[in-house]
Image (tube, rainbow, N blue to C red; front, side, top):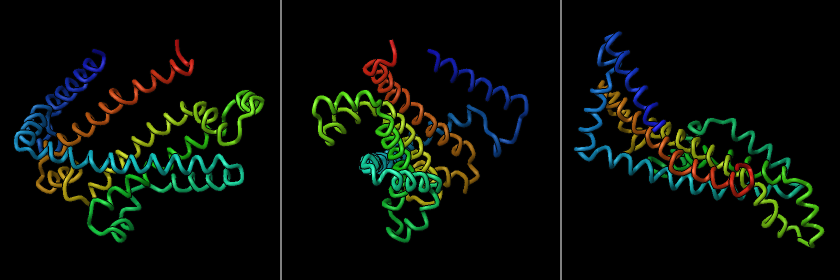
Length: 246
């Protein structure tokens, strides 16, 4: 109900601003025009296909980023490699993922693989840093208890350090999803044959601002749905399981 109230207030404020300022519909359309554009694209089947194409790229790229991020973060658990891994992740994190698109297009050509690579590079480093920080910040008391019980290095990582690091890893996964989603939209705006970014470019080229804003609403709705239906329940379970909430 709170989310519905916030959405209603935002739409009401949007409609009021359009009514008071009365800008050109070519520059700032109102909620009604955007809703009509959204409905027309749904009826034509264009919007569902674009959403499906974008989500497929997102899921593939994000899945690969999780695998790479976990592997790089676990490598950093090895003490001699910790400094090098942390430096690499911080350096790569500072490069906007869209900057990789020209190279990706050279390596993979005009294909979805180039866009997926941008998504992977956008999410991997935040996940790897979260894994590395979580493993490095394991309470010393837990490590001493594991050593006293005779746990070896590998068993300590799998049964002590990784579970203790899970709240930090979950935060990294959530940040990785957000970075991956932004990277995908940025890459699709620059190049894609189909997807939400391509629809925005199409609307821009035609001067169809209701279409552009309709796609923006869909992008926002997908991001909010992922947070509400996926990350928030996981965070609640984690807080209860790890004793971080009543």
